[in-house]
Image 1 (cartoon, rainbow, N blue to C red):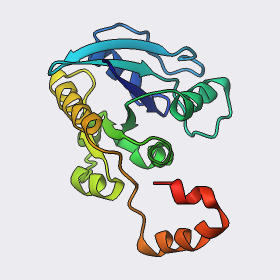
Image 2: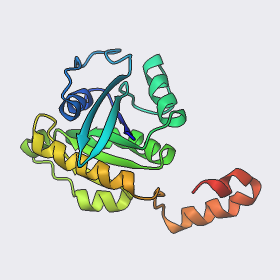
Image 3: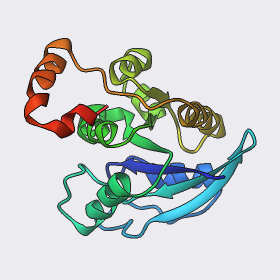
Image 4: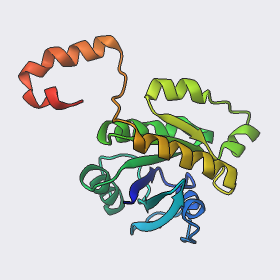
Length: 193
């Protein structure tokens, strides 16, 4: 049985380049609006498991403003997948966090990929991946999409997350208590975890 992994991310974070590195395919990459309108699919094997990767159109949010963003939102919210690989640009992580948090709310399993980590290092940007992983409650992996070593680390993280139980985002206690108090007014909130 194939493990289906969705690749999501803002435009221009190297998502399609990473997809090509993972699958050995040669999808056309570019950084102009509307470039990835269709969903690209590819596969690979790792440690005896078959993985099917779905390269979704770049989006800034799961609240769509274009047909491309709608495709991504619909896949992540309504299509079957085993995990989401959220690809971020390590040189401007703050710009990517809105989508990361929305994906973590919508999908039961995810890995955050900090791509372009070589560029971030050149710009003297240091990201504490262990601290970020702890705060988000998911694995955070740095990559340089063109290097096979970082692809192997990413596949290892995906293997781990697909074998684990679902997670829940760790919110501060006061927020959790407020949501619990409101749950009696909204019966569906009791099933949010």
